[in-house]
Length: 550
Image (cartoon, rainbow, N blue to C red; front, side, top):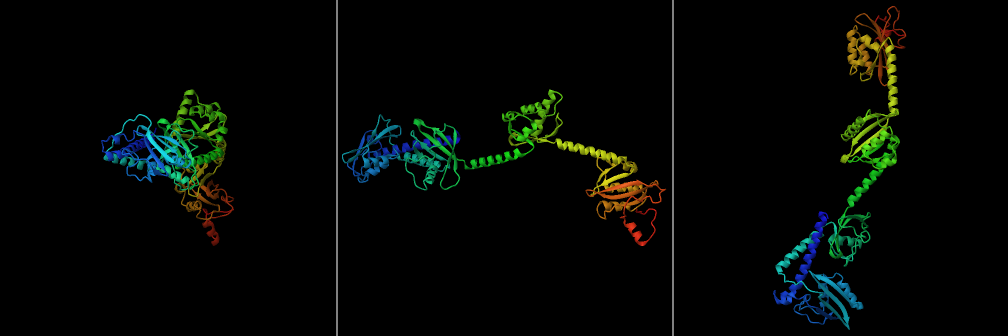
């Protein structure tokens, strides 16, 4: 029994006990008030048989001074109603039995309890009179007169307990051995009124969950029940618990769990959507819980690993899963068993910290990218991606680049390629021999500013370096052009500039043969240098360092 159920159970027991004491006290005080606190009549008012005779609702019999239910000055015309009201706390269906007796003459005998004593209440018709008898069914335990102050304290405590129970949002009720609802709190009554469109229910109260609690849940367990209320579209959900009482009675507690059910429904919908999404992914997914048992996987995992579905559906451990991968050659084969076990440990440890990422080269030549990511509550998710095509393409691309670089290195000219932001993208061995610097050997490729500073330091003064910087930065016309420069040690070169794809620029340094009449002839189809255009416009002869066109 949990704490809440224990608390409710104790309150109900206290209320029942207090009600019995108060009812007994009220009955006894009727006699005690008339005969004195020590009178034998007050103590024995329920220990003898009492008989009441009515005709047409009028009391014919006398009222004795020790009567526990009627005052001696009671109105005989309304005495039957007063007697039924006094007996109703002992038996909830007393009013119904009296009505049936009046209408159809059906006699009855009821048993009720006052404290630890059992009393019998009988009703019959004799000629034209209605006779009610009330008396003990066996030996009594004896009663004592309760002081008014004690009675008021008990009444106050009972009122507080009822207020506490009625203030509960949970539905609380008590059933007798025949599953009749003999007590309920205010929340239960409100639900019954809602089910009856506001009509006030009578006793015994109807059961709110008549079929869903048959058979009754075992003590200490919870049963989820739903209730269709007329004033709301969605059903109301409850978790109902039962605690058995002596003589087959029981108390029930029903807690509202609408938000919990809504959250579970949302989670279930999310999981279904995620499952459908995962099912369409080409990446294999395997999720292990905190106990390292497989709880989720998608179809792609079956295709990538070749592990049988039955094996995965049996929730294998992480070690068993990796053993299966090894058996199907879907994991890099270690050199020895010890290193294999160490790899498993490193795999799990790396995934827990969110740092595991490796490329697995499989024995059949395929390549897997394996990622490990931590999940809440200590779970781990592994993703297996077949990157064989990507690795093959990367290798081919790298081989092509190596081949192109080798071709460039065989050329007798120096070549450098720059991006629009001034970053050097590539160079060849001719460039390294010419300038005494191999950019490919640096951790970081030089910028155009650094390279042009090297060129200017090794050559005679020339404005071509500034033009190259503007050309690379797309600040001037991007047509190809050539210009002649000379190094400080007397080497004459042609500098050829032309655009390339991706907003890049190719700069070539070609050694010139001084014996040629026009060494720059054929290097470029048209001039794009501002100095040459201005010289041609003025009709001035071209100097030795000027640009020549084909």
